[in-house]
Length: 139
Image (cartoon, rainbow, N blue to C red; front, top):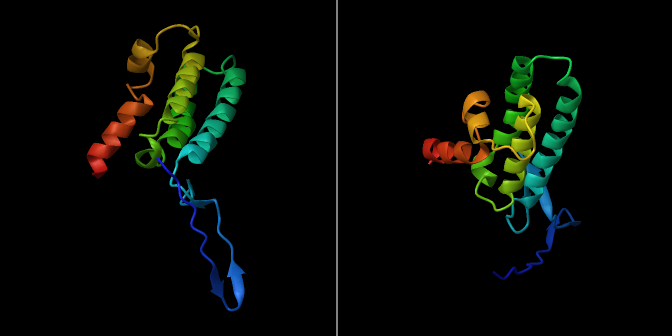
């Protein structure tokens, strides 16, 4: 797939308006090639911070409290705008981080399967079924 650069020169009131390579609109980062990688990187960064925090508080709160934190904070970060970025190849990074967070909450090993864990603790809310559900609802 070829990418073509278009250099547009826009003037307003004798001032030159420069082109931006990316912009944030309603919390979604869009670049000049309409790629979603920058947005997914930001989602991963926010989820990584939340993962780090969960590691430290998991010993002082119950599993139910960790689940509440997950659905209130992490799940909302992950699912916002998923219809925009969920079909991107980079979305797999979000899924891997989601599995890591679920493993932190349930205190399971890194190599354990998450299939049953998602069914039992996360109401089957893996990232890809959420994307499919949002496509069905909004398309």
